[in-house]
Amino acid sequence: MGGGKEFEIAREFEVEGSPGQVWAALTTGTGGWLRPLKYEPREGGAAPFGGTVTRWDPPRRLTARVEDPDGVPGQSLDQLDQFIEPRDGGRRSWLRHVHSGVFTEDQDGQYAKAVRRTDFHLHTLRQYLAYFAGRPAVFTALDGPPASRAPDALVRLARALGLPDDAGEGARIRVEAPGEELDAVIDFRSRYFIGLRSDDALHRFFRRDDSGAPVGVRVHDFAPHADAKRAELAWRDWLHHLYG
Image 1 (tube, one colour):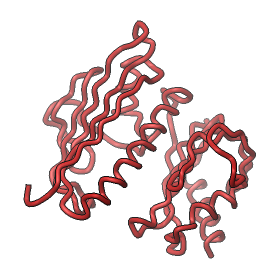
Image 2 (cartoon, rainbow, N blue to C red):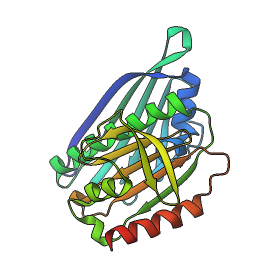
Image 3 (cartoon, one colour):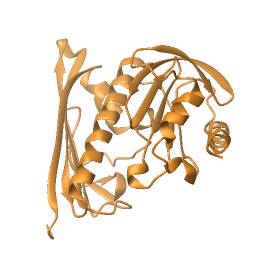
């Protein structure tokens, strides 16, 4: 593999929802927990990031493989393999998620970041399945200004939102979000990620200075009249004000 280093990140867990609901979340409902992605529903069909569907067996197994992923430096191969099994008479499911591939640069650093992202995204998938499965999502994504590349950028963002420094996962808080106040639960909190869940949305915040990138904000809004453009403008103004 051209001197690259193979990697594998495997996770398995039980989730809310039938195998059909989990399959829908992984294939057509990705805007509710990750970002909008499209799969051509057949083996040999197109997959995200210039990839190919190599296994399409609903609602049991989905595999997609990407050679030389678009816009991903330092990686020559990326593959996602998802296995779904029914539990509790089909009311719940068991999901095995395997992310594998080949890193060609900074292998240890790339692997550490991939592990962190995997765990956060799969956590968000579980939140989506438990609280919002099947609801259409309006997805908004934006990055902070260059000043948000600083190591303390996520700490500053948390304080600006009104999150106490000692508030951990499970804490219910009042959030000062752009243009609105939210009653939310902190569903995830680490040095690199913050996840907030309200009645109608999942807000995700990413620290990415270790990649030379600014803070990232992702909103999965399930409210009936959600407006992606309005949300993007509000958050962009807020981030530029925060980081000057």
